[in-house]
Length: 126
Image (cartoon, rainbow, N blue to C red; front, side, top):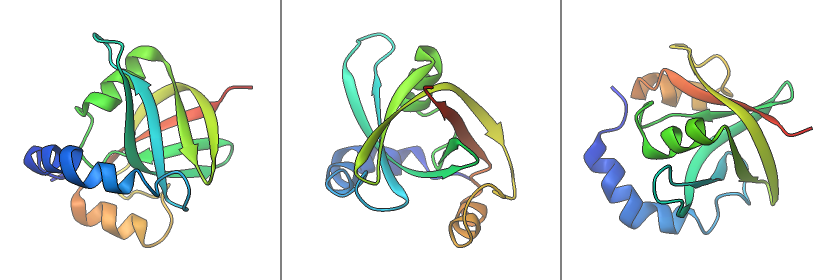
């Protein structure tokens, strides 16, 4: 059970614009900057992101079929606004971890409750 698609629509219209004001500036909340696969339009999507072992990991709270995930995988690169800076990332991959062992304590429990077993991993451009 990841978050329902109806909630995703509401969040796109209401919550994301509000979260976008602080995402990328405070820990945990970040913004994925990506381009539409077909339109080429620029998008900004608030996410939960964490850096560890030289990689970034992003919780897929709406599952692997989110449009931003498809856009990032198709492009093979994207930018992440996190902690007041922009990081260029490459080689995105979706991985599964039912225990969310990659996430910090507290977030891990929230992801387990949501049933969010997937995350996106990407590495910095060197």
